Image (cartoon, rainbow, N blue to C red; front, side, top):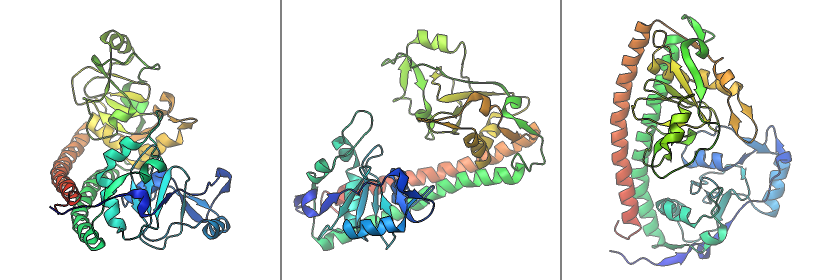
Length: 391
């Protein structure tokens, strides 16, 4: 085992943030301006979904007076989503939001890729450094005082190269999983068309559902045990983490299901905050839902649950939902607008053919997920070994 020296992060370089940019300074075209969302996308090598811009004049002014991110600098998200790490790898011109993102620059004798992997291995500890009750926030002062192990520069580069290879395998497998979902969406549209260009009858969700409602319009009494109570955040991953969902008393659950009683085969659909995520109820245990979720009960003689969920995952469904979304403090999709969403509805036997195809793709996806889990475990193991001086 190699002896590792530890240093305060703030001793190795400068940790700062940006100069404040006001919303009134945004322009239609110019120098990209990144917030937490865009830094997260860059960190995960994803396409930028929505760019803001500031004028070149404002950018040049900041560049002269205060400096801008350069190749080798590191940006780390520090509010809300803590610990997404992006290395500036080319001469890209951009600026970023003050406070939300910390800027690590001028680090001497520190390989930026080594530092990124090191910080990513410490993500749980970094999140524990954060403060704030409404949302997580990582203060500059605490990051500066954080101690990290630092081998010689050549050793850092050797470790980073090994981790790069393992990370590359992990990312490719993750991308393969994403592509299976993309394949399902594109094949669905090839087979059935969008609501404006379909050879099949076009109906509304109100036509094909016996009931469209939503969950509790008040915050119930949360308890350590009781009946599970699902919110929009609980359906954003492939699987529901039943160990960590909220619970409510059985008495309140019995009152809630008089108006909204979720059953197997129904579909949950996110309508507040994050819009347009569908989730088939494929379990039998009782639960209730919050107002952030809509409940769609398909008419089984007209439409199958799996077919309806597949449509709700298409960009055409999401576009219709977003076009009706009301924005205030949070995005909100009203039930009356959900009922208006249009979709192609082929005969049941054609829907069944689609479901068979979907099942085969899901088998492929499950195999890819298993391979990804293996590469994820290997990568995490290498991370831990590297920063214990064992790699």
